[in-house]
Length: 474
Image (cartoon, rainbow, N blue to C red):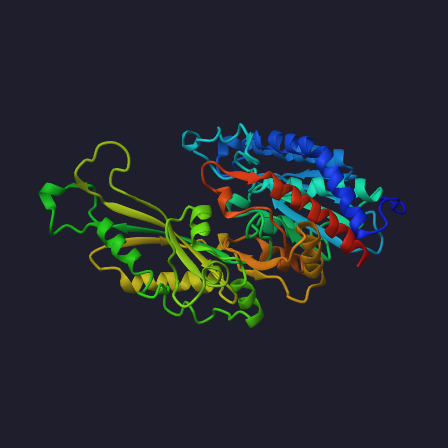
């Protein structure tokens, strides 16, 4: 264990922040070169052909962590993609923080990218384009850069808190081996707090601290009609068309008020506090700006709730893929034998994966026409539970204060609309989870032309560096 020296750096928070800004400005090009180098590695966990790239990605990060000064760095192999573990515990008596992130990225269709090839990053107009620049390689590197800036600005030889990094390689593939890894390495991963960096803020100039994430459950529904594709001219009319039946079912997922129609779906939905609801309503919501940033064309959803409430504290269901007939090439003019939909549920406290999975099964069984057969898969083991950070967590107040120092303005509050393994981390390690993200809706996560705002990323570096100082001396 490293013994820390007495800080020889700035004597005040303002002096430290000035030193941090100076360091980040001086090393900006080096920081971006790091991110460019990592993004060039095609670390797509969902594609078995990229397995060697997953190993290269893990070793790339391990090398950067060693260069930063972490005395203990390992690449942990799993039955899937490798994870990176690093530990720097050189602050006796200070809290221990586990930083969680991931180094795998979503699959890409190279010919759909217009700004640059997905793994050949391009920097222009204040944004760095490329797969993983925002989700999640940029956010992971923000932590690494923050450690470097923290040490440079304070004169310390070890961080003011005890840091452990766990950067997994399968988050984009449902983190299938994370639970086993947490159980196997429980002792080495022990911490007082988890800081999860795989989330968004409200906007680059309107920061908000994330205080929770929704859960996620996926379902695959196959509706079966004829025993084989049949020429429509021969059977059109009496034949059972699975596309029409699947469309009918999907159209019934919501009622006229935008509420989800699964039986008992809202029975376990927890009400949010008045303070949180007020905080969400205080976010600088502008419909025109939102539509431009999110590329969503129009606003819909559950009536009676603001858009931030619909995004963060109310459940949702979306159809994310639909397949039937002849999706490629000339049509055969046949009634297809099968139609398939991928359905994604976003849940909130106190809904559970098992409870919603049973509601989906019951809903389909009750509503499908008996002229059709069907197959429904709801893999509960891949589901994620929602999680909310305790409101009275001291570290949350410290993170908000660090953010306000950097942005020099009040910081709002929000949650994240997507899911993460936050609840799994909290339950497995027995500690609270705090969130910090440098993503934004316009970053195009999971889509073509993903990018990150360099200014927002660097403000994230400054915030994290100040957070380590504030937490270590709290």
